[in-house]
Image 1 (cartoon, rainbow, N blue to C red):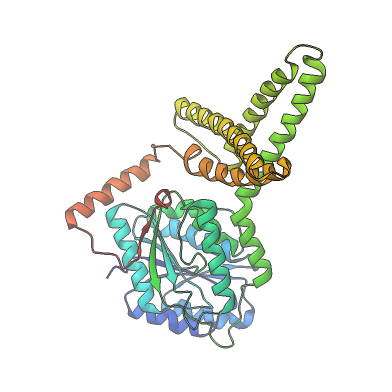
Image 2 (spheres, helix red, strand yellow; image 1 turned 120 degrees about the horizontal axis):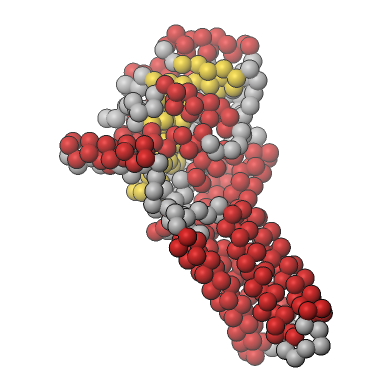
Length: 398
């Protein structure tokens, strides 16, 4: 059983049971713990003192900074003291403690990820259809599962568990992720979208009776949903901006540049669309998908594919509206709104999955070297043990 992982637990006013919980994990072979005291009250200091006596590292925030900030503090401590010496980090919750045997499952899968050199994010996945599952977890879990699939093409059964196994080579990228509250975990999950996931089944656990819950349902839910929709919102803004620019340029070309000349509308339409599509491409590339490529060829390819998609989208809209008008009658404007909304979502998914897919092959030299060492170690050990998991989910296969 792989237990060569460092456990990070952010804690705000934790229950006394956290001491016994850490002790039970130590009994199972876990020896390295980073507990982040995220500005807890002074009456909770005895809990942290007892954790220190057990051998856990306690890092203090003078004031409450949020779940995300606490996790980043824990990750930074890991990088400063344990990087290269452990399989990676396992994140747990202080107020909702999963069973030690499930922590072992996550640790075993994380160990196998390291040995195989795949470096996917291990996600502790609860069964949200069980009898003990609360209404919020059931409903929000279903919504998040649907949104991850629709907007990112990723199939995650439980995006909100907060139980992650982060491979050693991927901890640094988690420190660079923005966000201080519970939405940070969503950003962290999304950052592994193109790397992959390994889902490990864990038991659903209720909150301990009387425990102080740090999750604020309304405020934190809004932040989580905004994190999910942020990229799509930016995409919508760039698309609307490009449409406005198209109208402005069309007005200038037809009303000033080509005024009174033959085919003024055709010239104006084509030139305005070229300018607006170019602006839309640059905005979408840099501000929505943050696309980068190793070569000029990669950038040229993405630009060409974007223009072809724009032209195809325009043609499909015209043909579909014409066909619906002929078959059903009624207002062409209504049909156009319906068709263009459908094409809008289709275009987003195509751009996200194919056009602005990160094609960079070169990794950080140190990362590449560590990958090679891990793969060599795996070959020397023989086939890695079978991870206790539901299977790796590659977003490109979703």
